[in-house]
Structures are given as C-alpha cells and as structure tokens.
Length: 102
Image 1 (tube, rainbow, N blue to C red):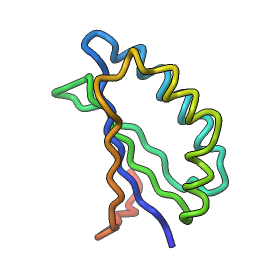
Image 2: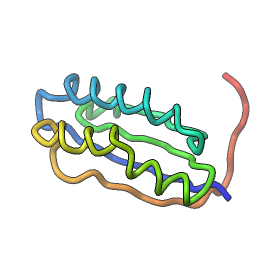
Image 3: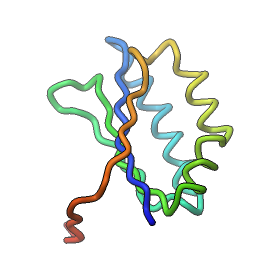
C-alpha cells in the first residue's frame, strides 16, 4: 500500500536558489530508490522561499529505508544554514488521483 507525504521546506530570505540546488540534488538520488513512485518538487509562486514536495512511496519499509540514506542525512546536515525552521512533513491519505497527462 502506497505511503503519501507532503513536505514543506522554507529557505531563509535570499537563500532560495542555494536551497533549490540542494533540493534538486536530493531528487536525483531519491528518484533512484526502488520504493520511490513520485517525488515532485514545487516552489510557491507567491512565496518563492517555500518549497513543497509531493511524494509517493511503495510501502512503509521503502520510506524507512529512504530516511536512512546518506543523501537524506547530507541534505539535512548541509542545508542547516539555508533552511528557515524545521522541515514540516505531513503523512496524507490519497482521496483522488488524476492520472490525466498534460
């Protein structure tokens, strides 16, 4: 059964581009994990210091493995000076999925 997460990460003022570089690197590693089904990054138009991940993991074991990966620990350790506050993570339940292609 899939696990869905929404993660919200804010950059300190003036650090959005630097943080985005680290977020894109995180994507390149995370999407290679077998359990990763979706790992989409969004940046809020009205607040470019705010980034939102929409994630889908194939199962709880895959998500747990993801959280122990070196690229996750490196991101947390290497972006402390760029992030404004804690990373907020919501575990969600899928209500409806639109699979329409753009």
